[in-house]
Image 1: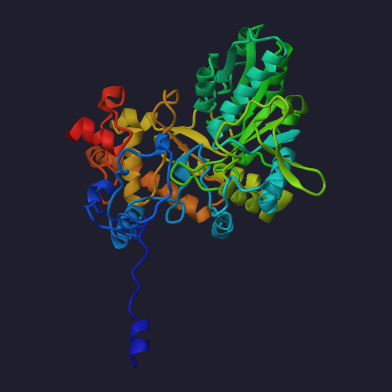
Image 2: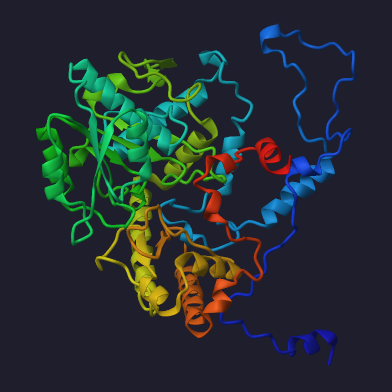
Length: 513
């Protein structure tokens, strides 16, 4: 028997019931701790070399305290950090609930790289191609939302929400109705709606869910009145429940003289099926870094889009892109609220979103939504087969579900956060939910259209296994992780600003000095 035949007859190890996983663990310091005086990764001018003269007002008193490292050590540092992460390119990432994590085609990164060297102050005649792309994407999103005009100026979804509340304020002021100082939102709408309204100086009224898990319409009737500026609502909400009475909600607000603003961060399950304007909304926003596939990129850079009715178009944040049939140009709407970020928009992410939409077309966008809904309801069926898991309000959902481990916690003492940490030992994770935990012991899953049936089966099997461990050996789950780099966060200092250290230098000053 030759070696090849002998090798072919060797037994193949059976596939384990759950994927074996072990995260790389480097105990990697942060880059400032790796710095060593005098090390260089790039050539820098020698002392005395000609330099650009700067006005004294912008000249640093001393050089910036940047890390000093060789190229090799910089490369090694960031590769190690990348190996200590979970993400869609390596893992089943359905557990990022409400964030709509999906596969972002790598070819779109190449397209985005083509605009990397553009300068935001270039003359318009030198960037006609990029301006055309903006112009076309604005009109695509207008068609998808049903709105008249769109601005891509905001740098994130929350910035788009703030732009919307600023337009609402400007609109009412233009009509002499600045007395409208209340904004209505719902408990399961994104918290940025309440936060942006509060930041803008509005009183926020929050509608709680009724017995069906929907915003209480009777509470809305009681809340609207002469002081109502707007309703800011996510639909489907972060429970995954779509409000079938949404037009009635909008109508009640309009009758009171307010505006209706649609948070479409959860639009992944309704693309091509329902549109904001068709439900009567005056404003809406999209998160391009969610629904339209531009990566979250560890929290940024993001990209937002504001859509408005014809009546509100003069108030859009500017600039927007105009076209006279020959030339694309930047223009500012007549009563614009101004910029909500420097320059125009996050161009690399605009390119990615444009490429994603163009690759799919109208029919493809609808298929995205239908597949996301199918995946979500299939996963919901699998999760609800796990003893101890439940989905409050027990109805079909759109693109995500906020589940609860309350029954399992009451039986075992193991909490949702602890189950999530143990799940990371198998290379997956999940997000619990926004605080406060209106759904007890929550976990929020959103599978999107990117994942296969096999992915969803594996994910559900991992959670079922961890739930079984919680019953047989609660302490084992509580002491996790065992082969993962995550750690348990000490929450005791989170409410004490004196302990916060948003930068390395603040940490050194507060905790190491």
